[in-house]
Amino acid sequence: MPFRGLFGREEDEEEFVEIEKTADDSKKVQVMIESLEDYRDVERVQKLLREGNIVLLKIKPLKDKDLGELKRSVQRLKKTCTAMNGDIVGVDEHFLILTPPTASVYRGEQARLTQV
Image 1 (cartoon, rainbow, N blue to C red):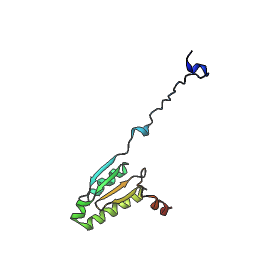
Image 2 (cartoon, helix red, strand yellow):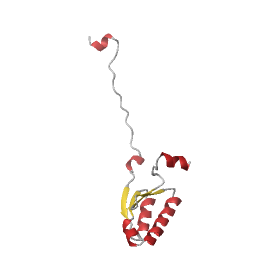
Image 3 (cartoon, rainbow, N blue to C red):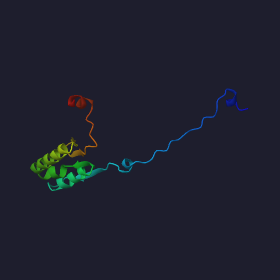
């Protein structure tokens, strides 16, 4: 008689439940890395955002070229993010992170408390 049988325990059988794959599982959020070299590039970035992608945008090339055009470009992207309930955050002085409504950028505990 096995030792486990003395105490009346039966061997535990592991049960696995199969989960069907949903349509949401197949669509992953893409993080796109883009460069802003001209005001015309804003349209391409807006399209990526509207498609649901997160965009890491390098703004240094346009900053070095024309600061006024950079400000105009960032303002247009900011309006797009606001209109679609997305998020836009400056990282360092050379990058922006732009997110669709399905994602947001965590800004830390203090920022979260002041937003409420």
